[in-house]
Amino acid sequence: MKLYLIGGFLGSGKTTAIRNACAQLMKENVNVGVITNDQGVQLVDTRFIRNANIPVMEVTDGCFCCNYDKVDSLIEILKETNHAEIVFAESVGSCTDMIATVVKPLQKFRKDIGTVISVFVDANVLPTMLQAAPLFVDSVTYIYKKQIEEADILIVNKIDSLTNDELNKMERLVNSKFPEKTILFQNSLDIESIDQWLITLENFKTPTRSSLEIDYDIYGAGEAELAWLDIELELFADESNVFEAGVALAKEIHWEITEQKLPIGHLKFFVDDGVQQKKISFTAGSQNAITEVTKSSSSKVDILINARVQTEPEHLEALVFDMIGKIEASSGHKFITKGISSFKPGYPKPTHRIID
Image (cartoon, rainbow, N blue to C red):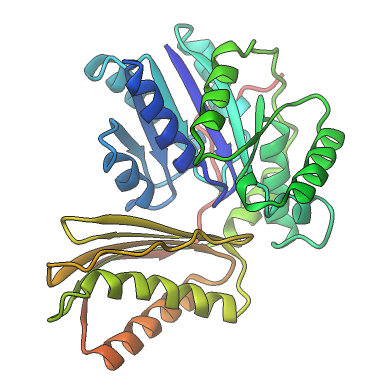
């Protein structure tokens, strides 16, 4: 069985790429499975994958490295129950050190599994992180660069947002910075681009990997800079524009975070009225266009929010509920909070760490 381990910083487009890769493989009658991962417990990405009828399981309450046994058990479940030939395992976007904590333990305990690491970077964010004043504090930038360091395949994603001149400059920059890496410049919304990634994964010859040299105090400090906020809401409205109201909430929250100049790791919304579903994503370097939505015939819509922002959890929570209150006051709509979790990740404590 093949395990495609997917790393990369928050908002780099990992989940969209996985979903489209799985769709391609399923057309070819390849049995696939996905494992999502987050420090929280309510994942927009899991719903996004499941909505495409792809078998998906999740590791919550911590990264893969701190939940190795859970990862191992879910791989086995997908293999046994779904006959998965390929499993995509997407690590939380603030995670690094996967060679020592995931790949090498798998090589030791599960010799039947071949692993390739793809690390995604957002083409809009990478130049700033490498060259100019980074978007985040130094400890967060440290995690970003360590993720790149352990990539088997480095995916420079979202190239569709670049001009030809910008793409040429990007290619020169990345090839000069990482001459030893297998590099793909990818638009994960394009089938040909996804096919090229799958071909590269299939033919990749696994090298002898070295575990990262990593300072866990800096790593832990970087994770602790980010506020994690997960909120599950129900939105009620008398008119048939309830879905649009859910999308409007996403826009308002993003606008306020941007107005306060808070660096965004990712800001994700999953809006579902039982008929249509939409994932809406905003990141530090770009935002996905919010396409036109169909008017809803329902008076209720479910909204799941995953926000990862460089600030304090209390401030992020207050900001979101302030926006909810303003929309309620101006529209007459009613929001009900079904669940909420806000926190900073704890110090990483890997189950295993195998170093050279």
